Each structure stands twice: as structure tokens, then as C-alpha cells.
Image 1 (spheres, rainbow, N blue to C red):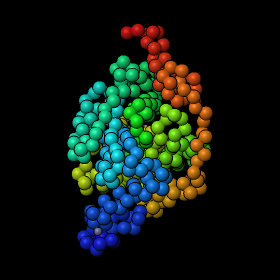
Image 2: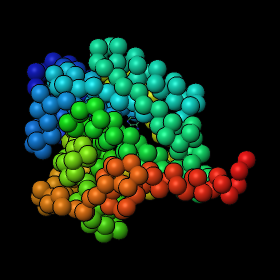
Image 3: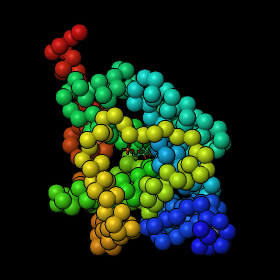
Image 4: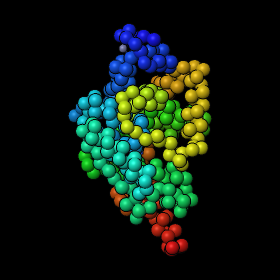
Length: 304
Ligand code: AMP
Ligand code: ZN
Ligand code: ZN
């Protein structure tokens, strides 16, 4: 098998692009697609301060490596969502990457906002789904940290398969409002809302996994135990099956959405400041302050 670009021995066959590549050209290809997305959606330039949210999984850790390699002005944030061994081990792997990259890593303990409670404990107490509580907390922490520390954009590791799966779910349920929020770059719509960027949206999950393996990038096997059975995983599985029959279909599906949708209008919702913490919300109190209030009520009712 020969590399389509240089003719040397190819290591990787990418059916969805009909390409065979050697290691160097594979790396160049993946990194080039990241650069292309950043430019196409005007996400950030080399002078902007970028905060990459790193979970320890292959996607966000690889994104961190790629942004450093492409000479972007990037620092990383790891959010501790619990005080257990799994989170501690993940943090150590993330720290190892920071050392190799000589890139600054910030760590925020999100349990401190809730007197040591993890999203899991909060969700069980309030009988809410763990993933939604965890998501609310992570988004709030990412934005607050970025805003308070002068970052101009927050980059996350969402890949093509993630975005295509969410899109499929939104189409099946005709949630057009949610589609608006699926654009790969969400600019500032409030003084305290830092723009969000997803530079991996043109890269297949499988290719990022290969990138991490080929380049010996230390990471954890994600699959949070609470995401098992999540509907988004079902849509991902369906797309993977389709992809077996029609290589490239996931990318075409997602690109079709970008073409059809065109640049969103961004005046999605009227934002005001939370009357407790001052961060943007559509209600009088933000979701975090409401969570705190509900927890307080519950604790008062059943003190242990
Ligand atoms: P997920 O919702 O788990 O698929 O994560 C989506 C993205 O959010 C990841 O690619 C990371 O960029 C970011 N992220 C998730 N968990 C964390 C965390 N604990 N700390 C920092 N960033 C995170
Ligand atoms: Zn080559
Ligand atoms: Zn608030």
C-alpha cells in the first residue's frame, strides 16, 4: 500500500476520503483540516488567547497537541468533577501532556461550588440525569474561568461523529432551535459569554483515535459510565453502520447541514445577568444558581 501523496509505504487507509497515507502525510492531513476549520469559521487567530477544555479523552488531548503544533496561543483547562480516583488518574495523564507540550494547564475543582458534591451526587439528590447536571456545571466553569482570565475563546474536542450524531437527533425530533446552537463557532452574544469553538468538526472520530495512537499521545478511554445508553451514542452507532455501507456519508451529512443552514443569526435568545452570580442566563437566575437553591431546599428538608 503506497501513500497517495508521496508514494512511500502507507500506514493508514482512509476509506471515507479514499486516501492511503504515510504517518507524516496523515498528520499533515489531520492538522490541515483543523487549520481549515479555524480559518473557515473565523474561530481565532495566532494572537488570540485560546483556552482548550481538556477532559483527558483522545479528542480534546489531541486538539491541544494540534493547536500547540500549529503555533496557536493556547493554554488548557481541566475541570475536576469529583474527588475520586478516576478523576485523579485522569488529571495525572493530562498533566503528563502539559509537560510534554510545555503548555500551561489550569485545574478547577468544580465540586467546590457545591460544598464538595460531585455532579453525580447532585443529580441523585435532585433526581436529575447525571449527564445534564454535569454538562451544566462544566459549561459554566469553562465560561467563567475563560472570562475571568482573559481568554478570547474556549475550544472543545467535539469531533465530526459527535456533531453528526447530535444533528441526526435534532433532525429526527425537529429541534430547529438546537440546530442553531450547533454551528462550529458561537461568537460573543453577551459581555460575559466567551465564544466557543469546535476545531475538530471536520475530523472523523476514528481518525483522531489513530492520530493519538500514532503520535503516542497519552489519554484516557473516555466513555463516562453515565453516558452508556445515551441517545446520542445510539445515533453515533447508526451513523457508523451507514458509514460502513457508504464511506464519507457522515461528513457529507454534516457538510450539507452547514451549507443549507448558512451562517446563523445569533440573536438566539435574549440574555440577561443572573441576579445571584451575574453570569448570563435567559431566566432571572442561571442554571447553576438554581441547582444550588434546589440542593439547599432538599438538604433542609432531609438533613443527614
Ligand atoms: P463531552 O461532553 O464529555 O463529550 O465533552 C465535550 C468536550 O468538553 C470535550 O471534548 C472537552 O473539550 C470538554 N470537556 C469535557 N469534560 C471536561 C473536563 N472535565 N474538563 C475540561 N474540559 C472538558
Ligand atoms: Zn506520504
Ligand atoms: Zn448564577
